[in-house]
Figure 1 (cartoon, rainbow, N blue to C red):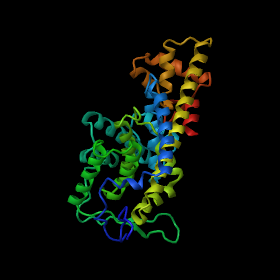
Figure 2 (figure 1 turned 30 degrees about the vertical axis):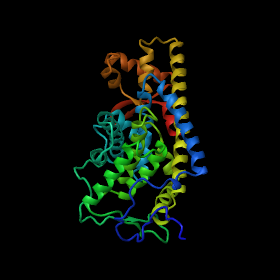
Figure 3 (figure 1 turned 90 degrees about the horizontal axis):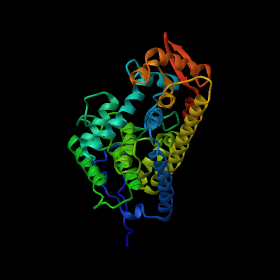
Figure 4 (figure 1 turned 60 degrees about the vertical axis):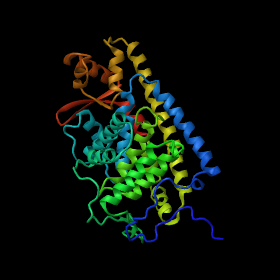
Amino acid sequence: MMPEVLYQINPDRNKPWNNLPPLPIKEELYRTVEIIEKLGEAKAALARLQGRSAVIPNQGLLINTISLQEAKISSEIENIFTTDDELYKALSDQNTESTGASKEVLRYREALWSGYNYLIKNGKFDLPYFISVFQEIKQTKDEIRPEFSNTTIKQGRTGPNAGQVVYTPPKGQNLIKEKLENLTDFLNDDTQYKIDHLLKMAIAHYQFEAIHPFRDGNGRTGRIFNINYLTNKGLIDVPILFLSRYILDHKDDYYSGLQGISQRGNWKEWLLFMLRAVEHTSNITFQKINDIVTTRDSILEYVENSDKKFRNSEKLIETIFTQPYTKVKHLVDAKIYSENTARNYLNELSEMSILEKKEIEGRHYYLNLELYRILSE
């Protein structure tokens, strides 16, 4: 008797995989002792992060710092690099003057939040969700790959197999839409598809990357989907999980995990990889939040006990911890101080070595040295 085939693999990586199996996958592929044990560890780490972040009164501490780091690292996976200084300056300028790589990273961050807000408004995943996130990342009106697009995934880097085709995604707009509709049904229907949310996220991430619906930007769209899915299902309140850090640090394992499913039906290694990513980055993000909050409180106490007198000292310190570079304009726009008072207070914090005053292209910025250190670690 022939053993049951649990997953139909891709017979020819050089031809469009139009027979990419629909979801769900068979239970035997994810109900193993090893996967269930790792799932428990990942869920515990994520729950601890959610508990910590939920009690922070000013979510701006997380929104402008942790989510920006996720955007930066996810962009680096696609070989889009910017320095911390360039990125933080661009954020401080409120996106108006950013160019090049910094602009691309800020677009990713905006797409992360637009996807988050889309799901709050609409409540579920659908084709317009994926298209809107993609269009935000790429700043394009392009949609699903057209019929004539001969998209292939090739081996990167400079090894002996560099440039070889490792995968060819399904071809044809109607077929791609059909597979995306199957994916969104799988994501939205928790009655028919009773699978733990973390496993669902990992399975769906593979499926999205295998469908590869857009000409470009699929990797970033898929990583934004990961975080948006976790918030949509209530596993975290805001999209702050630093998930791309683990993927970047284990980039080869990430891509080999994707290929392992299409070429060998090896779901086990992929699911374990994604669960390790959730566990590891939950712990990293938890520690970063603790460091930011503890340091903020320490600096506030130091300022309030100093000889210098600051009005609204708590709001002042909150503001300098919502992003690494602060400008006088930030405090004025928030209606905390007048322009002169804001400038005087920021200069005094610089004299106290809390901030470092920088002149860049004729403009003054104030760098929060401790926040910058925490985010750089």
